[in-house]
Length: 167
Image 1: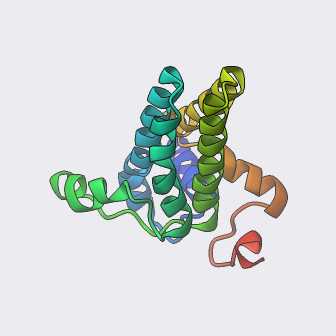
Image 2: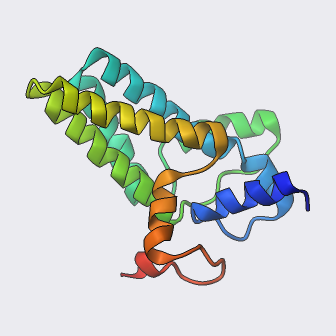
């Protein structure tokens, strides 16, 4: 396996996606970044406009991404793009990916609250921090929130339950 393929697999597994062969990891490497990309763009618009309404409109999608087996934006890929590309559907999200969505929801709510409360510096810090975090994932596949979970719960071991997901 090439160094690139190993890196792609490690970054996908770090988000809690296990049981994928090398071909599937390669095929899903970019599609798994679609939902974070859409969230990043939406958040950037809300932060640039300092708009609580724009940011709060994204919160339900982030919350659903935290509680559902797949992010709602995965529908765009699973029911559209994948048929055009001839690639497999996205797998169910693991605890670490869902944690990232929950953390994103908290940052969105915080930024919206700050902008509404006329605390634009706080809102900008929260909003643009979320944009930057998503940008890292979108551009490299490295998920910062999943890495934070790894610091607490350890590396994902496929075939073993995630210790934090069980708590």
